[in-house]
Length: 132
Length: 396
Image 1: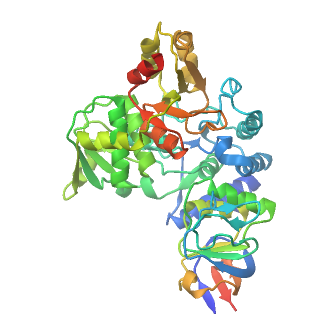
Image 2: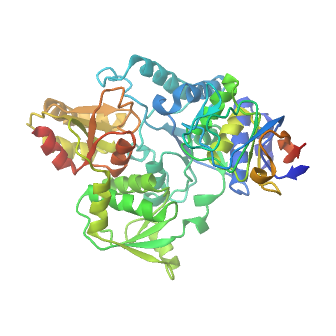
Image 3: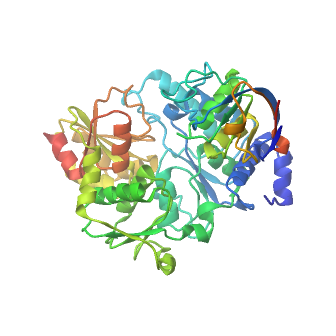
């Protein structure tokens, strides 16, 4: 199945999906050293996002989150790509400065359509997401 | 998004990697916000300076931009750092922090940013004219430049302001357009505003009521510049307000008044102001009394000096201001008066972005709702009072 949406940051990447039904804050909510979600009570708390196609509704929290994404990219703990329902400025900034493909506004809600563990190919240049 | 030929070349990398990366960021965010084009901006004010917020991640990013050859092509000033760049030892800032902070400032200087290290660039000669497009971060400065000066910016971030400084453009959306500068609700003030702390509390109440929309104030009296500074800071802290209109006060209020028909009116009474102050108050045992959130003007330093003159302060009184205002105050003998009384005056930093826990602070007293908000958020027992009360307490 192919979903079509909007390119926010271009690039191509693929990997196993990790789906969060809740918004994500990279500042304070994700440990950049381990790549694990650490926000207490978060639906993905304890999950590792490194190399995953990370699917969640949108970002939240401090603008410092943009730099945390960048640090993860440098440390090799960043997700391979990000898919949002509708993104926002902190995440978009983080992905652009870190060269992480980011798409949103897909023709089907990715949080419902994509399940954790599915293999997903993201072609952000064309705004396309392919699910096996 | 429509790009001019020159902008397309910048995006393609014809002016170097740093310009290309900056354009990529502005175009990506412009698309997210539905901007139709990029517009020239006259100046930038850049946030994300304190090592406390940036950490190694942000510091490395800034150093990488500098190494790529990023250079400002418009005037760019800088927000406060986490310490006085000279007197940091006296502030009890850890050495490791100071090393990180110096790396940050060096990267900005290498890129041609003026190391002003102040949240009030509008007090030190960075004063955009009405109607001009600028790219400013720092929520109080955004509020001031939009509301009091009538220039135009969105609530930008560290990376976007740097990108605008490097390219000279910003995405055209939000508060850059007339239609988004219209008032959303009327705030009718039904109590005399008697101190700057009252204006600060009004801002705090308004931010909670209005979230990120545009308030139109009625009966706000005749606030001085310092009152408008603390009002904007507070409403941008409890909410996401970037622009307010004040009837008979701000330059766009008359224009805004044509859109008032049919708007909801919310009244604010004394009770709401006092509740807002009380909401942040606890009883600190050993507070550091802080003046200068946002950074003090020369008038505030003068008032503080007059209050402490000849006193022997028992408590810790710390005053925060910009380098430029400090130098002017020093010439006028004000710094000596405050220091002779036992107070301290620091530059380049403030109570919001300095590493207060590492510096051994236990509590905070402040005349600023913004300062109080962050003090509480950082876990400090906090007291709010007017400057004369803070000085009175520090004298006991």
